[in-house]
Length: 232
Image (cartoon, rainbow, N blue to C red; front, side, top):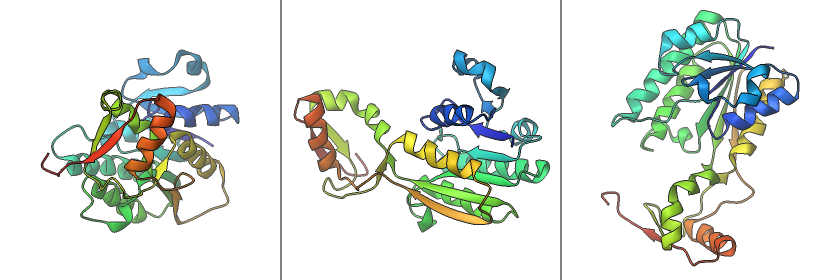
């Protein structure tokens, strides 16, 4: 089986590559910056330079591919839905042009609402685009990454994390490695067909208040969560 992985240097991709290599798969990595692929992996993978927002590059990079782990790149402009739409066009174009039969799509909790969830609406639109194809597709609706806490390191050191959510509102969290394990299972298992949705969550939901208590146990200094307005 020829398996392609997008965002190979991402939080999930870097784990997924190693999992596939360990079971004997030589994955094809679609990378915007091939030089960033870890040196020890290069003899064990095939690397193709491709931007996941460029339909033509994705089509060219996925010729001969049987299955693909697809991630919409994190939007970097003021119009995230437009960027998600470009990513959708790229994977749909590749599936149609190259006869790819299986897609594992990295989606998110909230995509099931289909609208009014901010940038997640773009993931919902990609789900719908893939569902319209006559291929086997699994959507991984993932919780909030624990690794996202690294974005708050300065705030953690200062003792206060800002959030637009209620600080006592519990929601799903997950470790990127756990997402990679689920993606690997879906890519390697040929016993499923049609459309599937898998929730990929941690062992329990956590509020920001819960998280700050856990941080205190590990970093030693008190950390508080503060709700701020959407405008702020």
